[in-house]
Structures are given as structure tokens and as C-alpha cells.
Amino acid sequence: MARKATNQLLQKAKKSKSDEFYTQLCDIESELKHYKEHFRGKVVFCNCDDPRVSNFFKYFAVNFDELGVKKVVASCYRERAGDLFGREGRESGFFFEYTNTEEERRNLDSPGVMLFNGDGDFRSAESVELLRESDIVVTNPPFSLFREYVEQLVRNDKKFLIIGNINAITYKEIFKLIQDNKAWLGVNLGRGVSGFIVPQHYELYGTEARIDEFGNRIVSPNNCLWLTNIDILKRHEDIVLKKKYFGNERAYPKYDNYDAINVDRTEDIPSDYAGVMGVPITFLHKFNPEQFEVVKFRKGDDEKDLSIDGKCPYFRILIKNKRI
Image (cartoon, rainbow, N blue to C red; front, side, top):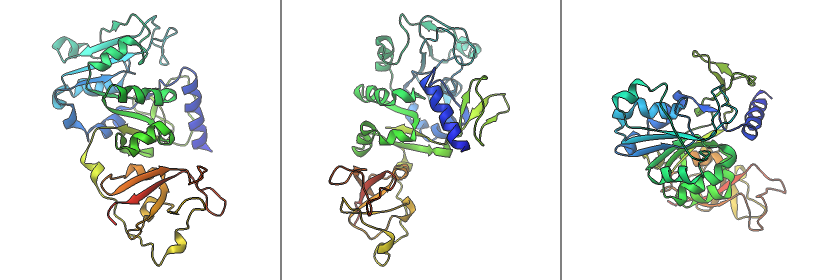
């Protein structure tokens, strides 16, 4: 019940002023350490980030030389009534371009932002122009606009590393990108994303809600992932298969409406089955495209949900072992 309350809190916030929960620096560091070599000589765009408070912007600014970044750009949607953390409102969106000059380093905690003519929405012409001039996008975009956000990145052929809800895997647009090997899950998932900073006036729900050493109020929904199209070695590690199908057929029932067996856990994938298997969506966190092929999502031959003896298990991804 506690976790459900936490998720409801986040969803309520996302529907209102929303999508302005701030990512913790520790979570950014935990994920981005795996991609450091990809930022050298690149323009990084954080296009859902107030540079005055964004930990994404701070990460790239502080690690500018180590990463070899060419430039960091952070842009923010206007908040007429002020943002969720009590900062003054603005009539337009704003952005900041950081190139690691001495003056910029001195004023890192209060950068002098430049105003957009418009609202700074990531879909606005001004923001899109900055997007086109960038190489890699790294941010926590609005969850409620996640499909549209990713579609814009793909349309503009941008590399990206972004946070989303685990349910994003089930969106047909996102699943198609994963199936076509055009996007994949990052390193951290679920509890690997430790929580988000929420405003002072928010009640702290859930057993993992807390106040950190800096006084930040943290809510941990445990249902988030990183989505990316930046390749790293970890993505090409095989899943070690320890189970066998033959001799244990009863543990792997077949679906009523598709010629495939059901596998309840990724660790239970058998090493000796050449046909199609239905696995949990969390399989994608360990998915190696050289080891497995993604065949289909969720539906049987009749385009109804996969079922066993008339009952539907949780969402399943249909896969096939390429090496058998």
C-alpha cells in the first residue's frame, strides 16, 4: 500500500504542475559513469532543465573537463506562478549555454539565463533549434509527454539518455524502437533509480520517502528506467542461461493463442529451447540483441492478450534465442 501511495502521488503531480520532480545527482552519476567516453567533443542539451536547480546541468558543468564536453545547454519551460520550489515566475522560457569559462564557473549557482521569445516548451521552434545544434540530449522529460518527446529526438536523429516510467516499454512507439534496435534500456532500473526531489509542500508517502542530508524531500517510486540509444559494452553481455526446458516442460506452459512457452522470470529462460518464449518486460533490462531476437509484444495470433488456460499473465515480450 505504501508504494502504491507513492506512485499515486507522483502521477497526481505529473498531471498538475507536473513533470517537475528533480532527479538526484547520485542517480545521474550512477548512470552516466557508464557513458563518459561518448560526451567528448559533444554539445549536450538538457532541454527540460532549469540551469539554476537542475542536477543534470550541474553534473555536466562540474565534470566539463573530465568529460571533454564542448558545450552544455540547459533550457526551461516558463512557470508564470513560479516553479515548484518557490522560485520566481517568468513570462517566457529561458536557457543557458555553458562553455566552462572562468566567469561561468564563478556564477555556477546563479547562472545568468537568456530568455526565449516563447514559452521554452521542448516542442517550440526556439527549443528545437537548440536541439538541432546539439549532439546528445540528457534529461528527465515530462512523463506525460514521453512518446512525443522521444519521437522528436528520433526525428532529429539525436543521441539521448533520458529517464522515463517503466510503463514506457509498453507504448507501441517505444517498443517498436526497442524491437528495431534503435533504443534500449540503460543500466539502472526500478530501485536502481533511488528517487526524486519533490517540493516542500508535498507530503512524503511511502516507506522509502525521506529527507536527505541537504534537506531535500525524496520520493522513491521504484518504477523508473533510463532509455537510450547510446551503445555501451554492458548491453552486449549475454544473459547466463542455467535452466533447461526438456525434462521440465510442466514449468513452461504453452499459450492458448500463440506457439510459444511462458517464462515467468528472466533467470528461468531455458538454454535448450529453440522456439518462441514469452518473458517479463523486465527482460529488456538484460537484453543482448546478439543473443536474442524480439519477436512481438503481448499479443497472440488473434491479437488478443497472451493467455494460458484462458488466463492472461502479466505483460509478456515474445523472444527467440538466436544461438539455437
